[in-house]
Length: 239
Image 1: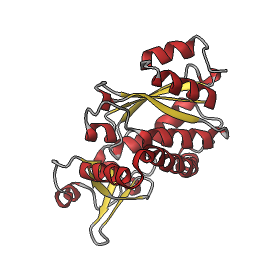
Image 2: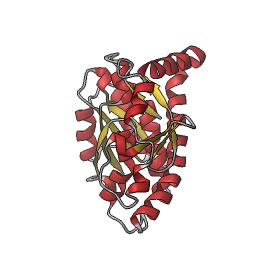
Image 3: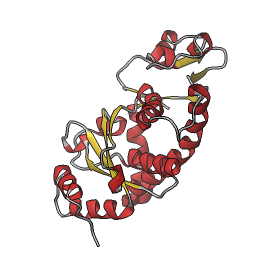
């Protein structure tokens, strides 16, 4: 799914800027970061938009995000956040399998033997091209059972604006599902700060359930993202 601003160029005009022939067909061994025009190819005859990995995409505006969230809240109330998380989690699990397939085909090496930073950047770059935002991953504390992920320009948060609470449950579920499937261990994820809370970017804590439970508890007690980081770095968890 490719997110575009409601106020940007209409999809009909946008398609004119996309190549009719896949860039991958022209440069099959290209691995560097792609331009938008390189990553997508529009088939005018079929009316389809496919990306570098031959997956079919759709163009969705910011109005779609608003309608989706408001529709879920109307149907299930406060459970909408959990539903979004579960949707993201299942998406992450399925995408992990898909990612492993195309990564090992393109890079001619297994995920287990490659550098973690290479694999993670390869995984997220398509999301950046699709409008989900740039990211930054802190792997320093992975041996301690947790890690932090920063998202800049979240598609959900930038659309909803400053609403005073975390809103990126879909991202949290996506990270939990993807990394759980990748390392074959159950992980959870929580957003500790959000652009929709007036912050400059969104921050997620990914880790074992006891770390996430502790962070959730501290968050309800009024702890900031920085407070939570300090507690985790100091080895404070709920017993």
